[in-house]
Image 1: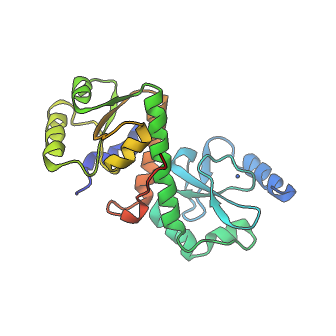
Image 2 (image 1 turned 45 degrees about the vertical axis):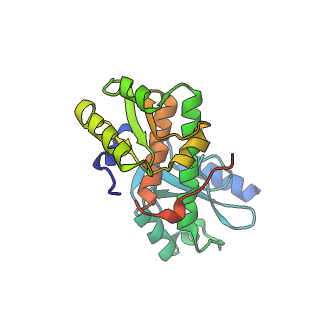
Length: 234
């Protein structure tokens, strides 16, 4: 399935110790005022929401800190597969940390899987906050409304179902991003509903948070990366 062009619009709309670790965390705060951080791979500064923070766990393992709250000096990377691969291939995490690190060989895949899970968990919060419409008919009722931020369509929806929704979107809200990266069983488990195929995100804080999480996931994960597919526990 070809990735919808409008997925690229998502990031536009969105616009985890020791005393040494505690000192490192303080240095990070003092040395990086505001909401920007510098990528250790590219040297480019970016908003925290568009980056990934890594820290050294107590056993020296490099760990992804999705909430950016774990103690220790943060090692920041642009949410980009190329930047992450560069940091790994050039040993930039160890150089930036200033001490040996244990780095899993499958780190990129692990990051992709964690980001995918984060998206689905956040989508569940979106529903509980009342910022999500579910079902074909309900989505059609709000399609074209200014309060819609994005549409979600199960990646394994039938061709007929997908074509029908895409045609409706093209006529009523072509500017709305269309997200087709999660299968119906993933969506159903995350949302606590059976057979979820269609959903519409309503403007709100958690919907915006989801779009930010999705933008990071999409930047790290190739369109056809089946290895990143995970199943949430019921």
